[in-house]
Length: 157
Image (cartoon, rainbow, N blue to C red; front, top):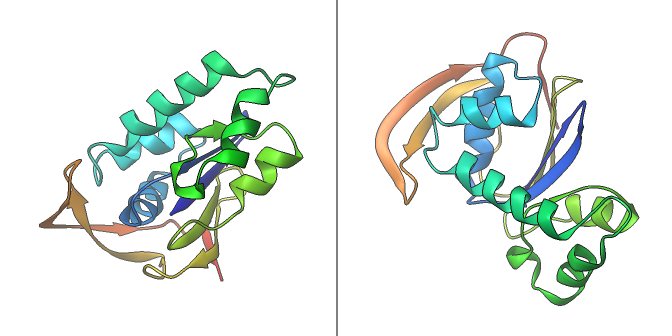
């Protein structure tokens, strides 16, 4: 599933297992304001997501600049969508890719607006409250964790 996160510093997009959308939704219960804060909060629900995303964005930053995006443009054009590495949104090509569904869909987390947008989600509808199975970095466990979003958050549709 493609997951795209907007914060005050910009937009980042990445592919993760579908349950990562649930982990990020549950992490929004802490009202994070930055991508890093969201990923840090998600560690309660998914042990490996933060490291995977930050590692991928570090590699992106080594090979791309806001005005020199040849490397990511090439990857977006040549790789199957599920194999495109994490990237930052800097232009129309990366914006379009950040909103393109992969396998189970695409979910947008707009942290400043406190809004989660299920552009396409065929995995499991996200909800304001619920339980999530802990992901230990390799697979979902039987351990259930509860969450509840503050009233300032909305999920659409």
